[in-house]
Image (cartoon, rainbow, N blue to C red; front, side):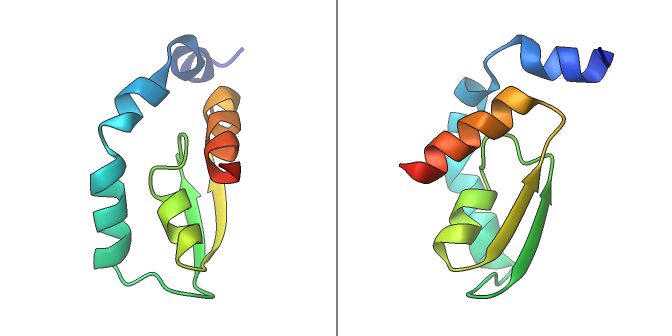
Length: 79
């Protein structure tokens, strides 16, 4: 296994990401993402910026080395 992948999948990054939710939404607002904007979120984690972008109607593709974080983001998005 890729050591970087193993590192990011080792812990529960979602607990850390929780503290970044507000700043992720502020970033999305600041850069002007709106409906039908195409967004590629590299290192998306559990969706800190991908989810606020999608809520604004953007077309979002989130990519991360850690499968567990992408799964956590998909669960957050469904809620």
